[in-house]
Image 1 (cartoon, rainbow, N blue to C red):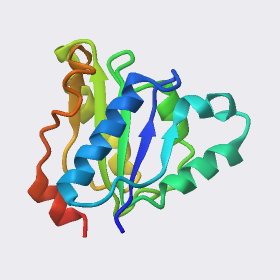
Image 2: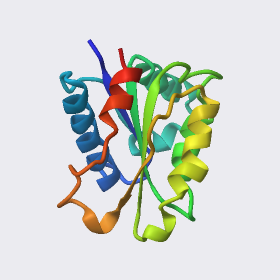
Image 3: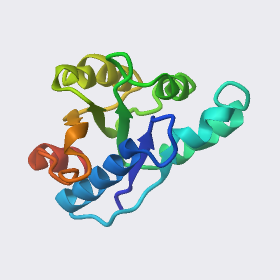
Length: 162
């Protein structure tokens, strides 16, 4: 069974980025015709352990490694993704995402940050081996009303997820 995992990189627990990522997971499951199932990691809960408890971060990354598809969501901080997400991803082993379909989702207050997901987040995920068929940007003004309106390329996603 296809599992769709979520990694939310917002330092605020139960953030809007996490909620948007969960909604995207539901949309992906619907597009792929699979149940909504898979690990969810809210990086905010890992924040106290990021630099002091590597085993905690390793366990979270291990749980996410069992997902076939991964949603990685972050708000925009300083025109890029959060430092917390960077600190978590820096602890991932080389090739951690090799062969996995990853859909990055970046949220910002202004459309002028729409390219951040392509320029900053996609490269780090591909460096870890991810297949990134589509990166998504969401203006926070559309939250929560339109959080389910994702323009997913269903043909590409279905071809990659088998």
